[in-house]
Length: 310
Image: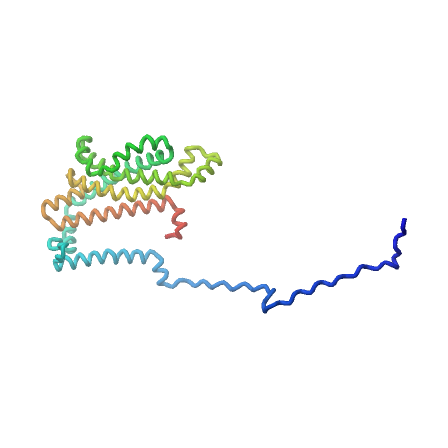
């Protein structure tokens, strides 16, 4: 057994020198750059705030309507006759005089009220049946196989073509007009609802199932909210078609309503009342469409936030 080396004779191993760092090949190599200063956000000026806000939208809408009124005034004043004839078209001032005249009696306001009642009743029934049936058809394959072939047969038939049949079907003329209004709104609402239900991401449905959602909870919390954008698109389109159907039905078989008022004015060759009836129909349709857009914002607040509050 060899003896341990004596401490006096122990020589420590040589210490290796640290390798010298490589010299930089260019100025700035190996230096950590300082972060650049963030640009200072400048507050938008008055014109930018106006242009981005609702004031610009209102201004553009006013200019659009004013341009139409200006063209109408010039074309009727100078009796424009360039294939489109404005010889017998009343001027805006004549229509305004007629507005003051018809509002002196309750007949015109009564006709408006009757048309609004018809459109709301027919549209409400179309919304309930169209959305309910659309969810069932879009969600369940068996319901789609049973219902869609029959519905596709009736869908191409214009609502106005149902006027003679509706008179024979329903005992009351009022109910037949509401039925025609319902038909005009029903199919756009139905088809958009079906498309909205079918367009829902299957991942959302599987995730809800994984979390223990039943079928009723799935329809309430996943299917309906996911299909709401398409449903409101169908409501907007259906409202426009419902007004077309209502006015046509009132012109053909009605005794009251704004459509009957317009047709009666044509029969009596009262051009100012014809224009007044048409403008009234446009304003009523605009108010109904605005109500649907407002309801959509209330029912889908997440879309307002996702669009930056516009």
